[in-house]
Image (cartoon, rainbow, N blue to C red; front, side, top):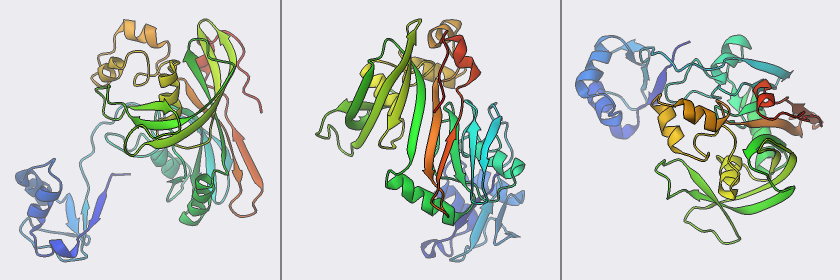
Length: 320
């Protein structure tokens, strides 16, 4: 399996030479570098080899097969929880991206489902962060994806997560508020949660989660999180903003500089001791929805990773 990028040429770009089009549209290579790629045969138009100076026609399909590069290591394990003609539900590991992005392509759940489960077009109806383990549902065709996505949009899908957090969390806590960019952070993608009814920033996203403490020991709480909205980083950002960061979370932990050091491969032994785990302790434990064909209730659960038991020295109840 190779990474192949496709683009259809718009009418406004008709007549532009191939090399000029690529250098202008995709600036991560110079014109000379794109010319070399064209000459090597890595770029085709409508399936045929081209020259750098050949003009593009409107509607032509340009394909680029970039050279294979080493990918970061990942835990390529997953367990099939349900395999239906229309969808598959798996329990993924805590170091596996769901879909290709950045340097990850073959080391993704998307690629593994194509290769191992022979699913032609895996469509993620919902996604988990790379370091979040647990239940993931994937549609096998666009029609199923539309039906299941509509259930998510109507908030008819039940989701429950388990998390290990630093500190003694309240017995129960319902949060309603907003997610905004964390302007204090030096990391652009980081978000903050703000309680209240009034949006505190432009383009604020409403976020609501119910939390329940399941156990407390050794300075760590086991928390069940039931999100009523589905926002990027919702649970992690909310817990962080409440003062209870997820164990092992580099971005939303006690020291965000761990995130930068991890990117640069400079995590120290002191960092690892402070994090307690090598991955964030957030787990998709339950997913409940209606079957896209017969409307029967479907429920899938996944046990927490074995590594959690090393930092939470009591039994973790993951039964429903």
